[in-house]
Length: 507
Image 1 (cartoon, helix red, strand yellow):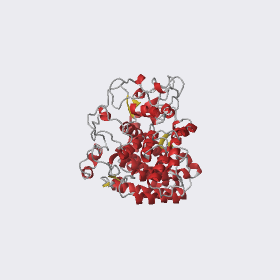
Image 2: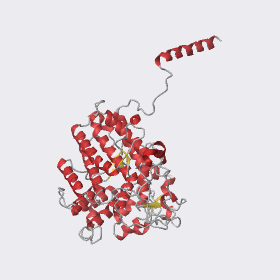
Image 3: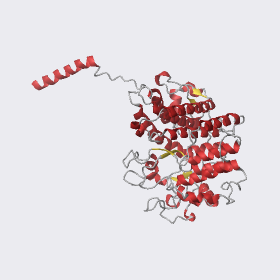
Image 4: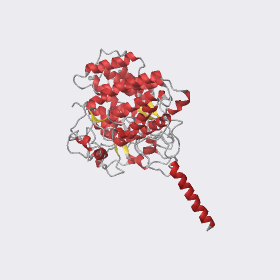
């Protein structure tokens, strides 16, 4: 009883103290960020961006005609029969959550004396917003990311968002050039390790992507040319000779939850055991046969494994790496192509033990091919090289990114192969579009789908699961947004995922 009396007295004392010190006050506002140093938020935001992009890039790889599924699973009617609703493909919530982190960095970098983070955070904000527009069309932008200041943000016109992203990237470059990373904080940046020159080049490369996505819109030429010339005048240049990636060696670890997210999903676990989903994605028959027909077998052998998958030697197929042993699956096929008899995602993406590859955000090949398109469409822009030179460098950089022998990329020059040999290609813009499609494979499925919607190239087969010609041109707004922001979602009108095209998808 004496012990019990002492215990009760102690509780009374603690509660008395708590009344004065708000000890038991647990009413925390969930809409207000707790105190955090921007550098920690920025590192986590970059890592989260990589994780968030895995699923939309997967969907894009299917709908661009690059990937399909093996027949070791019941066919996904959501993906291959296009039976989806506003309950599917909710990439919206994760992207906006991630955007709030970058906005926190932008808002707080000055007060924490970490101004060097503000420019990179603006670049990442622009990247995510561009992808949101490409998935959903009109989106909350000017009224978004304000926390309790705007709980039901209005939607902005998608074209206006694109235009403002160019301005945001201009601001980012000014911030980047004015604020070198403090040496103690370079490790906070798991993309460029605080290299501001590369951040400025990434910003320019992203601007070029945004501009060229609009290149088929009537009356847009003057605007695009002016903005490209501004990039050239700014002087930082573009990403070249390397790809933009998150993490990599020293960041991703052989520990559960810390692997490269692609490796973790389709490759292996932290102990090297093969994931069940390794048997799901397969390269399409159209992709495999197109590469064979064009004598592009070096890239084929890096994009895919031969039937039977990765062998006992990491990164090498179990069967001889001969063209005959690479088998694609017809898009949407539900039988006849079991995992062992079809080509899995190859060593450019998955190698047993290579859990620490960077997660790719943008390739140098894409940049060069966008430059080729810009020069071919607008010959009077101030870009210094010819469209042919950019095109050929785009193929070379694709070889490098895939891990193929770069020197052999030159074999296509003078080969007379349509869409590979610049001089022999009858439609130069078509050749550029098709090379973009190839170079996006395994790295940028969402961009591949966007470029496919923009150009209609290459002319990939319709899914076997579909009896008409309809294909998705966008996603529905997710039901989570409809529930939380119904009036503004309703204001966008009736959305038809097969007919409500984005502003740059002109036909």
